[in-house]
Length: 485
Image (cartoon, rainbow, N blue to C red; front, top):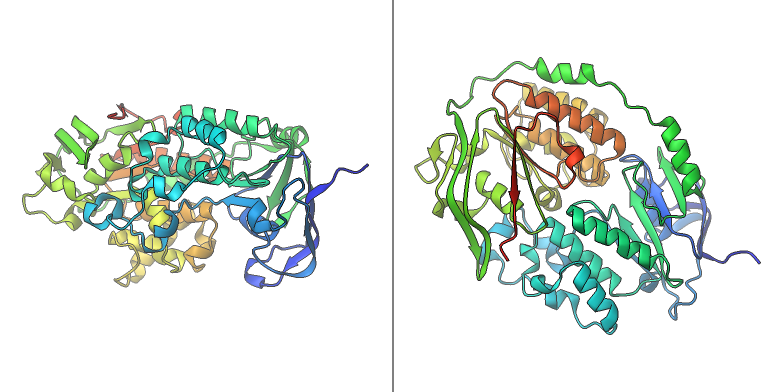
């Protein structure tokens, strides 16, 4: 007897041409299979998921489901999808970039406990709460969660609904090493349940968990044939060749230097800095000095205060004025404006990615980095647009310059925001999880770009990552933050 399908699509073409894949889709997900949908950034993976979940009606072909043994028949009840763009639940539409640091703008946002609601399955609840250390987060406002904590919350909230099919977009990114390992073991355990099918959408083509049984490759807006995991892995290993990027790196090294550089040897100095929100201490009496030309790796578990620390350096956090902080040799609060500080800093972070909901052409998103705005309020000059296009070419996205930002894939959006961080050739580069959601090729490319940039004279960098292998070889110092429990 043939294995029953959970999702069956034959000759599927969606009605809306803006979200249509290049060829009709024929694909069966069978009961008992756990599937990885893999492909490079912008290949069409999310469009395939949207088609499978019935988000867009079909113009041609058929889409059918069999959610047995689930009692309900609707895709809405049975398929849960955690997309890449972490949301702040119902608060998302009104969320703005610096809101997390502004206490007076947090009063109306719900707490984690409220968002999780009542849970019938106490055993599953206990398991998930322990795995993701949810208890200490329960009384926190959703808005105050770090990007890693937010992913834990999203996974918990979704898994508590006990779906028949769970689709997760890059579930391991943004999680510290211990939580990644724990999540892997949880998913491995869940994969043994007959009533749950796991579908992962992955950008890293070389990192497919062992509990996955089958792979669906997506390239150039075309869905390939479903193959067994081992067949795919062997084919990938055979085709994967690291591309030399010497020419790309040389282009960055040859960039002429601007005239507006600072002269201080001290770039960042924190003297006994403490940050508290209500009864929670995020940073406690932190001393840290970053000298010109140093390259720092900033690490620590989720919720340890890494992004809060960076928000102080970038002048995004109002509490920075009450702290003893010097930037570029000048003490905060001695008359300099935020914009004077920011013009020396290039910055990218998961928070910025989440808040960037402007549907401007990609080149305008990059150009907004020239003036540190979210959105473009000042028309760039012709020569500035040429610089923006140059950096987009360096990051491999020059061909997307006129495409609206929100129509880009999440990986392409990340590349645009990276180009935005580099566009003014900053003296201080702050990269918070810069390789989030990038495919294998783009991770290598961006790492090479960062490395080349770090070899430029007097450039200073602070980089946050949960993956040791993402750090460039130019790192000169490490700062590890511990949670203040």
